[in-house]
Image (cartoon, rainbow, N blue to C red; front, side, top):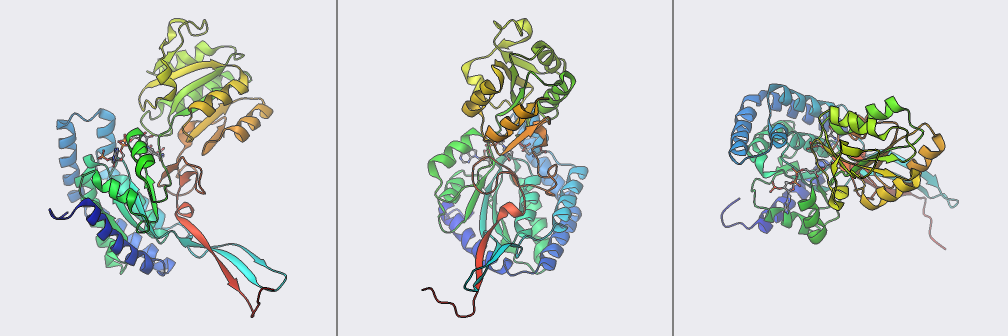
Length: 420
Ligand SMILES: NC(=O)C1=CN([C@@H]2O[C@H](COP(=O)(O)OP(=O)(O)OC[C@H]3O[C@@H](n4cnc5c(N)ncnc54)[C@H](OP(=O)(O)O)[C@@H]3O)[C@@H](O)[C@H]2O)C=CC1
Ligand SMILES: N[C@@H](CCC(=O)OP(=O)(O)O)C(=O)O
């Protein structure tokens, strides 16, 4: 950013370039977009040493600033992670192009033939955490779906993102696609986030990926349509009918497989009719988890630390879990309706009627029966990759990949029809 350029002017200029690129990109044939991404993947592999050097600078700064172990783990890159990043881009190149797909067709009684056809959204702004692989994943998904993207990654990853972006764009440009299709906001000034949120008409869609502070800012300031990818206050409800071994395995996996991801379990709800609640709490503790609940509940006793009201609305992203006893599925549905963030909630039950009711009535992007919340992932859903997990209520919910980055338009083919 030039010293004289305000964040608002910077974003405005980037959006103008992005718009021009998006118009070109929307017309690029499938085969050329796929080739450009294959070349971008090669460019990332070739730039591995540069990316690792840039990442080392970010990690050193993060360590000096006291970043947590979990944050440093998300930030850190090595040869294997860079190879996985390049493979991810190549995998997106191999996916079917959604642009031009015909969703449905109808011929009206007057002979007017209508069809709905997928088109790119246009210019997408993505604000995300300090996880450098998101730079590559998000850029690849946007280009493959014909969108130009403005990327604003976390400030701790700024050097890594610069290096990844430089390689990506070199690959894309070498294939003849516009370099402005993928632009990176390199200032860490959060005013640029505000400018993106306010860029009504210049940016078509903002995807914010982050936690509470970002949520608050988006809610207060966004004038551009938002596809929120926000926090995961996720629940597992263990019904009285649940198989004990399955319940234990699902609960421990949902919490402990990776505690720092947005799909991790945060609150365990156990039916008062479940025979052995203490066994579930003990399994979490054995796996290294701190469990917070009501010590006055005889079922928990001294297994739990006292929970406060705030615990039910807390995303720990750590080896900490809250637990409560609830009265059947009614109690679980009421608790989830009050405290869930719309990300992922699961039930463990043998009773199919209860499970189907849970699936129907929990209003989250992903609702699971007898499976771990850690499956909240585009790769696990067979989408090839993901921008993240959309937690709002618009057309794209849960893992967002190529289809979620498109909209559609109606095409009508007539023979001179006029409306009476
Ligand atoms: N649903 C999903 O797909 C995903 C959700 N998440 C959620 O993200 C959270 C963890 O990520 P975390 O590292 O804490 O991310 P943060 O929310 O701290 O940061 C994410 C991005 O938002 C920016 N940001 C945060 N607050 C503000 C603000 N007030 N004004 C302007 N910009 C802001 C950050 O910039 P800066 O660098 O300046 O801090 C960063 O670019 C968890 O809640 C997790 O569930 C994470 C991944 C995927
Ligand atoms: N959906 C992905 C993880 C996404 C995610 O939570 O990212 P982050 O919070 O940056 O670690 C997965 O389950 O692997």
